[in-house]
Image (cartoon, rainbow, N blue to C red; front, side, top):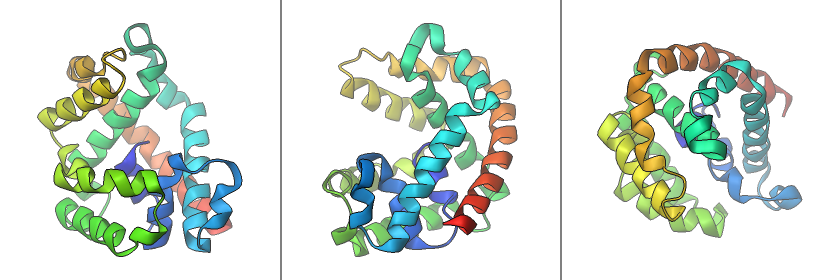
Length: 194
């Protein structure tokens, strides 16, 4: 799961959303240095990642990409799934996607001091290029994949990842729908335990 899904799966608590959003940059027990609700978001993120990586539907999606993208296949599928979430947003959330993302961006600004240094650095770019909304379109996805590929010195080949997305579009969308229903249920149960 990528940014949009992690934020959405956090429920309505803004601190859990923030923790879930920035969790990749928090190592080991460093999460204990954050306020309790942000800690919950970080732990939820880790649980979602473990659930996702082991899920047979997610693995089915990554199999279509392994031969070309190798260990980047999972990252690409994460992005594909965010695309389908953004595209079908009204099926998953009552608020308009633009309003939802603007509210989240505002929350990041208001809670700047709680963010990791890495997160503080990416937030301006995320807002300027409106990453979360740009997931809705194929050109938006191409742009993000190209930026991600550039960060790997063009070794990941992610700039080409929309080719497979378009070639297997309906299949990936079906897999996303099956998987997302299950990860939503898992996340609710995990949040209740935290």
